[in-house]
Image (cartoon, rainbow, N blue to C red; front, side, top):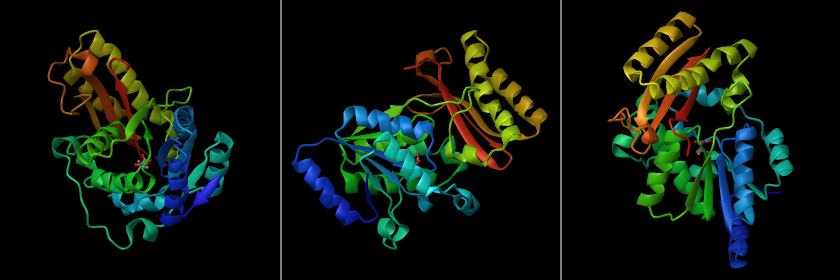
Length: 283
Ligand code: PAF
C-alpha cells in the first residue's frame, strides 16, 4: 500500500492513475478501523481499480475538545488492516497539511443540519462538509463510500455533492453490527463489557420501535416508553430518539408513510456518545 502524508505527491500519483483511465474509489475515515470500515473498503474495491482510504481526525467536526482528545488513535493497527484488505493507497495528512492555518470556511445546510446530530453538536456538519470538500478536491474520486450509521452525515454529504457539483457517485454502505446487534463504531473501543451490554439499549429501542410502529402504536407513546426505560436504567443517557423522513430528516409527517421513515437515536453510555438508526423499510 502506498502511504502519502502530503497532498501534492498524492495528487501527482492519482494524476498518473487517471491518465491510465483507472477508476478511483475514496473511503474517508478517522481511523480506529473496524469491520464497518472494512466493508467500505470492500465495496470500493468491487467497483474501482484504485481504492484510497484517508485517515484523518478532523478537529473542525468536534464540538467538544474532550471528545477530540479521547478519540482512539491506532495508526499501525489501521495500516495493517488496510493492507490485509488490499487497500491501494492511504492518505494520512497532518492538520497543517489539511488546514494550512485556516479554519474559517463554514457551511449551512438549512433545516438538514439543524436537527438530530446538528442540534446536539453545533458546527459538527460544517466541519464534516469542510473536510470532505477538501478530500473530494484533493482525490477527485469517481466514487466515495460512507457508513449508513452516520445517516445524517450521508444526507449532508449528498447535498454538498449536489450543491458544489462534485459529481461523485456516493455510496452509503449498510451498518455492520456485532452479533448482539450493537452497531460497530470506533467509539466502542472505549466501552467495557458492561457498557457494551448497556449500549444494546440503542439497538433494542430501535428494533422494538420498528415492530410497534408497524403494529400501529403512535410514535409519541413509543418514545415516552423509551425515555422511561433509559431513566430507569440510569447508565444510559438518551439524547434523542426520533422518527423522521429519511430524505429531509424532518419529523415524519404521515406516520403511516413507512417507506420513507427512519428511526434515529443518540445516547451516552458511561461518557461515550453512541448513535444508531434503522430504516422502517430496508432499501
Ligand atoms: O465518518 C467519519 O469518519 C468522518 O466524519 C469523515 C467522513 C471521515 C469526515 O471526517
